[in-house]
Structures are given as C-alpha cells and as structure tokens.
Length: 105
Image (cartoon, rainbow, N blue to C red; front, side):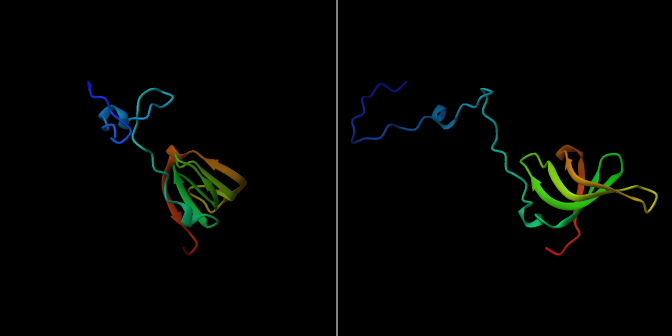
C-alpha cells in the first residue's frame, strides 16, 4: 500500500492492478483481433466446411468469430457436379476449415 500524499504537480504511480479493465464477466481476457478479411469483401470465395461440405458465394460480411455472410451462395454437392442455389447464407465460424478466394484480390 502506498501511503504518500500526492499533490497536483506529481503523478500517481501506475499500479499493476490499474492495468486491468474489468469486463462484464469479471475476468480480464486477451484482446481479440478480428480476422483480416476486408480485402475479400465483395469477392467470390469458396469455403470448405466440416462434413466435407463446400460452399461458394460472394462475401458480404464477417465478425470477430469469423462467422461469414455469403450472398449468391451455392452448395457444391460432393461426388457430383450438382450445385444447390441457396441465396444468402450465414456460415458459423467454427465450422470453417478452409477459405479460398476465387476472384483476383
């Protein structure tokens, strides 16, 4: 415990406990960095997902957890050349295995 009195001309020392900002959950966590997908916005992408599923579409949005929003989406059925048109699709980030840009970046 610091027992000194500080006047207006002197700064209070920074304590280790002052570095943490309490969150709503109560425990501080590491700063989460969003995925760098801005350069792929409005580009056609192919996404390989769990269960050997492949989806193609135009990337129109994403978030911190890599949840993706695809427009003009279509699912490519494995083992055949069949394509199922879906339209707008939201892909949960933890089901994404691989993402490939089909347009030139």
